[in-house]
Figure 1 (tube, rainbow, N blue to C red):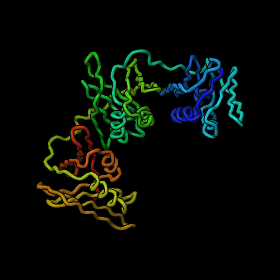
Figure 2: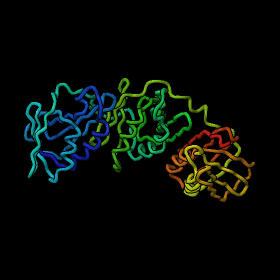
Figure 3: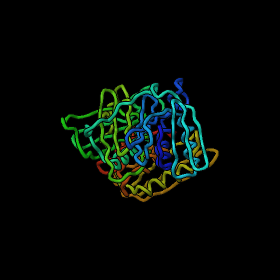
Figure 4: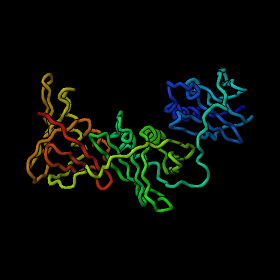
Length: 368
């Protein structure tokens, strides 16, 4: 195999690859990427057996077709540190040579026939299509609420509910829930509702594709896998098994304490009130009266903070405590200048809404 390639294009592809290549694994070949050259194309593959990535590089000059499997981190370091715009890669059996103007690297690889094969997206469109910018905006509004570690495996992912030309993304860690709606460009041709759970790592990889204006993501569902094709990248991922919680049951619908707040003013108020909290007293108190919303936080060793925000409100007074970081996570992804807050009793969840597209439910904490 022999191929001449653009160094920066390969560096960008390897940046995605190394994000899924496992650093520790009982199968050393999974620390590698497979490079396959044919026709006028060069494809790079990476997988950890749960999540796979197939990236096409077209800015190449093929001298001889073939394939090689080499360690991802070493290849990435060589490409990153090289100073040339163009590099040449040659391989014979399991040995790979990379040459620049003033450099020559010889890497020992593994047998390409032993590298796990990943499903191809194939020809034709997907079951669903969605604008990449829309999908990435939706991911930003819900991914943070997924469970990082949980024995309830289903909440380690994001629920996708596709109905008509709308896609609902829902995430929860048991203490909060984020839900957002995004528009599909193309709905399922059979008109049936789709409901799947996509792993958080797969959603994070979609974010790492970067901003690609007007790019479209085509989605295929094959057995227990999801395939996502966008521009020169195909992501293949196992779906999360299990039942996602019936989130509709925990969204309050009977609240009478409602007010509209400035997104930036509320975000600033929470951040400042949290400055003097500690690990032991990490809650922020919201005190709502007819003319003001007061954010307050304190700790015995640091002191106390109070931030006053004028509001228009005609309901009864209430005091309620929340984890400030959980509030900040939601407020910083709201894309509108104002949002609606709805409250019940101090021991019931708070609700944040931004139009019809974003909803956030947050359990209160007892501040004593």
